[in-house]
Amino acid sequence: MDEPPQPGLIVEIRGARQGRQRVLVIDDGRELVFSAETCDELGVRSGDVLTGELLKSLELTEQRTQAHNAALRLLAHRARSEREMRARLSMRGIRADIVDAEIERLRRAGLLDDEQFARAWVEDRKRLSPRGRRLLRYELLGRGIDPESVDLATRDVDDLETALELARSRARGSAIESYEAFLQKVGGFLRRRGFDFDVITQALRTVWAELVERGEVKPAEEDALA
Image 1 (cartoon, one colour):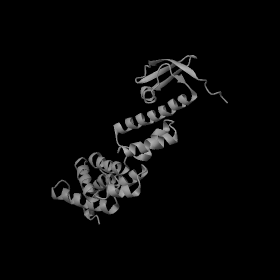
Image 2 (image 1 turned 135 degrees about the vertical axis):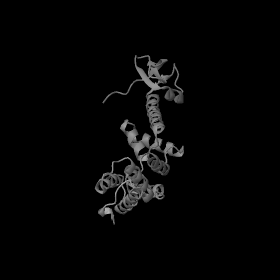
Image 3 (image 1 turned 60 degrees about the horizontal axis):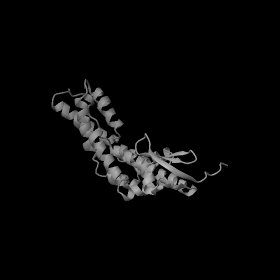
Image 4 (image 1 turned 120 degrees about the horizontal axis):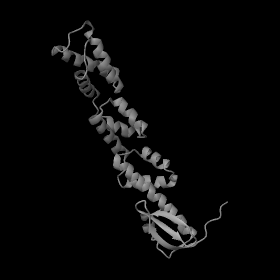
């Protein structure tokens, strides 16, 4: 086993090239790098004795600092589920107990809330990439959101309304040469967006009738979509 490091005197603390980091120069020639936050939190100063206990405190505090800074960077891009945050921090080699503590810290600060995450996820999907309630549930459950929160976030999703909007948009953007082409292009698109058969059938029937009424397509014998 490696011998524990002997106590040493911190003879100098200088800035490092990597932003807010500090280099602790020890009288035995060692140079230890910690964040400025860690050094400030523990009140480390030049002339202090670097005991084994202080070194352990520095290393523990550094991991906590790294966990918190990494979590804030992740949240700066978008909201995260608890399971996703836990996985991303663990991938950085952060100890499980420190990850647990950081998750709890984020919860208390209101920065990690699976119910809020689920609501935001649904709203973003509505705005950027609408889809059926079934697919939304699958996505949220896959991100570790509990079923009750998933139900709350998706309960007001109107599949038929969403499917109709998507079908109309898809029909406008596609060359509809025949009824079969309409079924393939628009119906296939709705299936990929996670809508149920009954919803797809009703949306296709409604939008096809609208196209016929406007004279954009000719009625076909296969118009009965029931």
